[in-house]
Length: 391
Ligand code: NIG
Ligand code: FE
Image 1 (tube, helix red, strand yellow):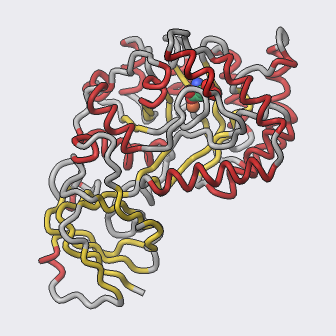
Image 2: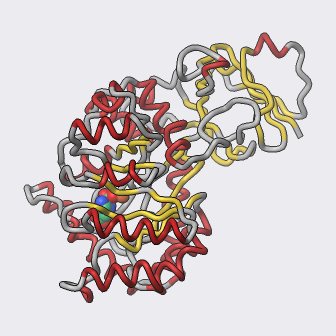
């Protein structure tokens, strides 16, 4: 089965060899999809009189790769409306709020968790996210963490074991005992259900030594490291991520020159999460400083009930452009190819031959409109594996 998508006004391929600039932009473009993969991406004129089983006329609209959301926390129950409202009237954000969600998640049935996680994944898909990662981290017992990963496995593409989100209240004052649990029985139960291991290495959560012990234990079990680093203060997280060749250091809000240099000399991606600074009314990470130093930057939602209750990557792109000094091209790249790099995936985030046919059609002539038209729902169609799933 082949499908020809034609009359694409502007196509982002993220393959510089196929078009202009780092986005590999092509005007008056066409795509041909076969068996869920791209087999042609380029100018319509270069295709000649192509034969295809199905032809779709996109009416001059823009097409870009589906968003790759490399950082989300989709499995939880309850919400933190009151905490958000209190913050908007002046209270600061702290990691401690995570325990409220842990309590609600532990009390919820598996059916409830499945339904809520599926609803969030569907919400993300409607906004153009075709690859999504989810972490555990709101169970914090052996059973509840394993269940969280099993639930995430039903509707997400990548799973991360985050037993080290915070020290749960029953371990108050006994953080080292909790680290033993995370690196022992909890890791045993969770490793088969995840590809990644993560630690919240920050004020109020885990310090650098604890984070190193947990990530090292995960690596020994075949998991790959990623890290919540430097969200609340300039701690050891970013340098630890680089030391362990983590795929990504996430948040990266408070960084020293040494942190920036370490990232620039590594293959660790800096995943910026503008929804978190937006919803905690905190200073944004300085994306310009990172990009100018040569750091690879991704943008992700950080969808969670405490610090960033959004699944919407167009919103994150808008904020990154307006508040973090990214260009629209850089932000679109970061939310697609950048997310793929942060997940060490080479089959998504770009639309060259061989890539998965995961793409977004915008009701706009160019990808720049994602930032230029803030808050407007421009995602008209979403295709996943060559199938039109939205619109
Ligand atoms: O990525 N920073 C740690 N974890 C989440 C917040 C979790 C919460 O507040 O529930 C984050 O922002
Ligand atoms: Fe997070």
